[in-house]
Image 1 (cartoon, rainbow over the protein chains, first blue to last red):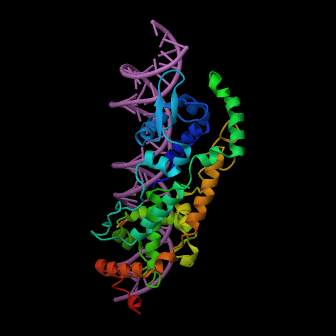
Image 2 (cartoon, each protein chain N blue to C red; image 1 turned 90 degrees about the vertical axis):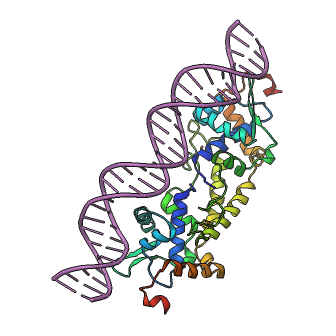
Image 3 (cartoon, rainbow over the protein chains, first blue to last red; image 1 turned 60 degrees about the vertical axis):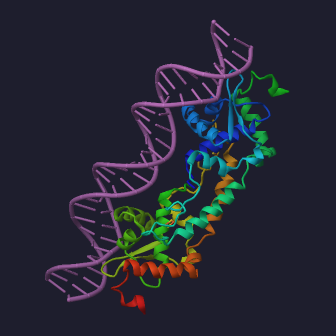
Length: 157
Length: 157
DNA sequence: ATAATTCCTGACTAAATTAGTCGGGAATTA
DNA sequence: TAATTCCCGACTAATTTAGTCAGGAATTAT
Ligand code: FES
Ligand code: FES
């Protein structure tokens, strides 16, 4: 489990989509502008998120990305795993052969820490934030500020 | 809070020292060989651990590094913080000004996640592993394998 | 005193990862 | 048909991680 700014970008972008789920697909261009992430970099990240089965793209005007499954079934761990590949922090990759073919002194430490960390991050689902009144308030305010979804009739309905 | 292999190196090295606390100071040369980390890189990491007040160096023959305070008062969070500097994952650094001077959509997410993650890693102290029989067994076996502390009379006493 | 050991320091290089760029293409909608 | 958007691959730049080198300072053992 590696936890860096790359994972933060991915989670941030996924949050943005989840927060606008009822409006419809969200374009990467929008995310790029509102979250301050380079468009092309987002495309790289979303290639991985797509492979990870977390999002699906909708092409053409009015398109964008939407969640591939309900927000309560997407965890922060899922997202980080999709973009950073590995989930465990052992040096050996779980095989216990760091130290001349044997388990090294810290194998157990990293193994257990990985399990606990994974369990922790798996417990945080996107919908926990989507359904919070204080966050919804903020989203609405900022969408107006950025002029998002002005060309979407269904956004109001 | 950034969680990468650099932090793993640091925690691994600290674990090694903690596991040999009763023997005396542990040399970086030993850690380098047994844990497979470059000696000079270890020196860089220990410069930070020293500045962080986690270890103190003892020079001269028979010297090495020892913990600056009891193992039950050193957490994984302390170590990672010492070598990776920052503890919080917000883009803004806690000030809430990502999005044109305002809190961005995900500020709360990262703030709360940082707090929880910090609390989690703070709860893991070095002594939890030092006092485990299965680990102690492994340490003894591997020290013999690597021929450690052969020149230390006090190691047996 | 001398030599050996070990920490300590700073500057430098190499490799890997992260981040961003570019140029184009394919599917969809209006 | 034109506009929009995802999609794809190769490229570059910046940052971080990892390792190297060449010394110096404190301590202990002889
Ligand atoms: S991390 Fe698994 S044996 Fe070292
Ligand atoms: S992370 Fe704090 S405002 Fe965006």
